[in-house]
Image (cartoon, rainbow, N blue to C red):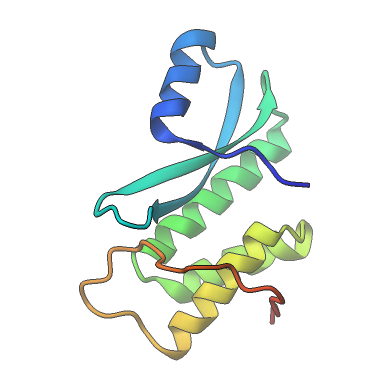
Length: 127
């Protein structure tokens, strides 16, 4: 199943039109081919108020992503691995794959946290 992804302007437009009727999870900050500016993308998860378990999961994920972007890879790995064990989403596997790669070969000092990939890995292994 493919989720619907929206960018930040679409998220703000959705909120302006419908209020806080949709609960979204931040997914990533991506740079579209040919563009210099990266955009944030989100996944609308539920219409209405989410249950407390989903809120905690999304908060933990977004905290791990913040650690990832701050190059606190060990801390991001711990949280993301727990999330993956509890709910093995491909999203968590993708981040674990990235984190493990950066633990083996750190990004350059000027890394801005934006992943530059042409494709997603087909078979992800999560340790």
